[in-house]
Length: 274
Image (cartoon, rainbow, N blue to C red; front, side):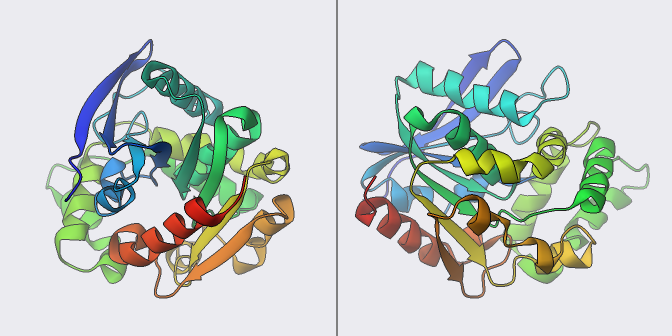
C-alpha cells in the first residue's frame, strides 16, 4: 500500500517551515538540494515510509517555506532541524542530505552527535576558495525577473541537458520560481560554510554513507563551480564512511534513478550497526 504523504507547517520565530511527513517507525530526515524543495524526494518518500517515519522539510527561502528575515547560516538551518525535532518529539534520527542539504546534514551530525543515528550524504561536492567566491556571487544575487519573460526559458534550459524536457524539469522550474527576487539563502549559507566543512566533518561520529552519482560533477565542472581534484575531502574528513557510486547518477539522481538510491539507503539503514 502506498504511504500517504501529509504536509504541515512548523511555526518558528523566523517564519513558517513546510514539511512532508509519512510512515511510522524510526525517523529519517531528508534535506534537499538548492534551489529545489522537498519535492526532490517525491519518488523516494513512499519507498522509505514503508518501514520508517520520513520527514522532508523545505529549507527556509526555498519551496513553500518562508524566506528568512536575514541572511541565514548553516547553523541557523541546523537550528531549524532541532526546532522541528523538538516539536515532533523526535530525540534521534537518521539524516539524508542532498548537495546543499548534505552540508547542513553533516553539520547537524557534527554538532549534535547525540541526535543522529546514521548519516547519508548525496552528491556533496568539495569546493576551493575560487569556487566559493563564484557560489556566493551567484546565490547572493539570486534569480531576477525579466520584463520579457525570458527568465522562464532560461531556467528551463539551464538543466535540460541533464533532466530532459519533461515533468522533472517542470518541477525544477517551479522550485526555481519560488525563490526569485531574493538571495538564494541556502546557497549563500553553504557558500559561507563550505571551506570550513573539511574540519567540521571530522567531528562526525555516526555511521556515514556517501552516495555519489557518476555524472553528478559534470554540470558543476562545466559551470566552473567544482573540480575533480577537490572531491576526496569526504573520505579524508570521515574516514569511517563508506561510498557507493550510483551508475548513471546525476545531481538529480534522487528523482531519476530513485529505485537505486532507495535500495542503497535502505540497505545502509537496516544493515549498518551504530
